[in-house]
Length: 303
Ligand code: GRG
Image (tube, rainbow, N blue to C red; front, side, top):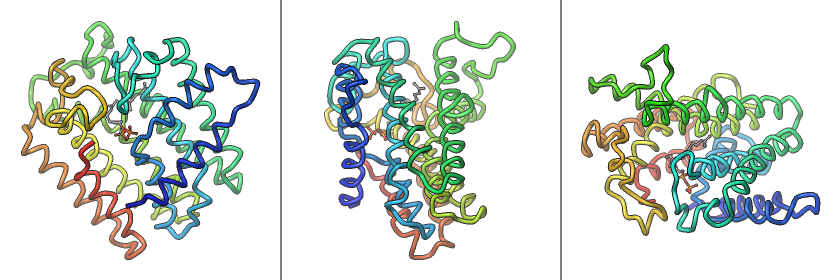
């Protein structure tokens, strides 16, 4: 399913990563290496399907679909670095810093982050929609979104990084407080970017504010369900199929949904969130069908 849209995304990613003599070959190879490693392209698909569900033209949303995948890829490159998660394998291949070196991997991430906003500012039309997408994606990726969530996640794992004036990032003893803490991390670390995929699609379709809000709610539910499913895959999944190490979270004592709530309750929560997401787009009628199917895919995926 969605093969045609995925092919369109791959082609656009390829077109945007043109070789320019001003960009050193090593940097160009490094960023291409990670972008073209073949992820699921979930975020670009959400941008395109949201735009279509809100009555817009898919083609108008392609630059935003590319931009969000570049941000996602940068976050994975940086997340894999020795100073962060220190991973050797991503999408079934050596991580960027393993294939190249740490300095190149940092710069490849920086380059992708910057290029994403260049693409949005230049290629989303009209300019006021481009500005609204730049604001949307920068807030989602930034210090109160993905970057802030990553910091809070690291603070949960490493006591030496915790804020002196707050216990917010400490590991909470009580189960419901720990679930709240986990949710607060994931809402920012992975959820905000997924929400932005949905809301940028709606903005490009020039949707009314209440439709943008509806997409935002759909994104919130799908984003959290995606994270629970990711924790479940880390707990029960197959490393070869996933293309990365599994059970790392559980073994490092990191807070996870199955670790806190058990596998059954985690699965039940994810199913409930997907139901809520599907109900929230019911007002779109048939136009929401593809998004509805994508929400179900989040639960069914095995990698
Ligand atoms: C370094 C600023 C900074 C942020 C990193 C998103 C993130 C923050 C780290 C990724 C860590 C991780 C494995 C989170 C779990 C959820 C997630 C984002 C999984 C990977 O996304 P997929 O499954 O990957 O969409 P593919 O490879 O299919 O694109």
